[in-house]
Picture: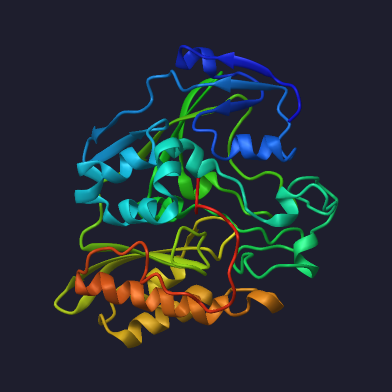
Length: 345
C-alpha cells in the first residue's frame, strides 16, 4: 500500500470538498488500495459523521449513507415496505461484511473484473484509460451482457443497487457547491468509451443519503443465482414487482443484476408486462424483451437463457405473493466454482 494522508472529518461540511477518497466501511477501498488499484493521495475518514439514521421521509424512507448493510436489512421499515431490498442485502454478503459495509459504499463499489483488480494485467480501460480491455478476448465468463461497449464489459457487482433502482431510489449528494439529488439509475454511468468514469459524482461530493419513495403496490421479490450456495456474486439476479388486479398486470418493475455494466432497470420488460394477463407466457415475453439487446461473448452466452429463467421465476414469485427469496434456491449452475469471497461489500 502506498503512503497517503489521513484526515478525520467531524462535520459533513468539513468532509464535502475534500480531495481523494472517503473512508466508511472500507470493505472495498482498502482492498483496492492494497492491490495498488486505488492510489489516493488523501483518505478522509467519515465514520464519525451523523449519517447512519434510517427514518420515514414523507411516504418513503431515508437511509443515511453510513447505515450499514446489516442495519438496513434488519430495520422494520425496510422489512415491511421494501422486501426486495432486504433480501438483496441478505444475499449480498456475509454477516461480517454486512456489519462493516456502508450503504453509500455499497452503491459505489467497483467491479470484480480480474483485469481491473490485478495490476499485472496491463490492459484495462477502467483502470488505465486507453490501455484496452483484457476481458473481451480473455476470461469473460462472469462479465456483463447488457450495456457493454468495445472498451469495457466489466460487471457492476452490487445486489442492493438492483433492488434500489427497482424502487426508484435517489441519492442525496453534498459537495462544495451545496446539495443535490440524483436518481441511482442515472448516477451509474454506462462504460461507452470512458469506462473509467463510473458515476455522476463531482469532485469532492459525498453521498449523504439514499432516498426511497413510497413502495409500489403489490409484491416485490429479489431472486439471485450464483455458482455456489454460500456468499457469492450473482451470475444473474432479478428484482421484480407486480401490481395485479383481476388477473391483469397494472404496473410492473424489473431490474437485473449480474448481467449489466450498471444495475439494469428494464423498461422493455416492464412495457411487455403492463396491461397484459399475469401468466407465464406474458412473463416469458417480458424476459425476451429484457434480453433483446444482450451482447454476450463466447464464455458468457449462457447468461441469456439463465437470466430469462431468473426473470420468469422472479415474476412468478411476485405474482404468488411469495416471500422474497434473495438467495434464489441457492442453486448451482454447475459451471464451476469461484474463489471469490463474500458477495457484495
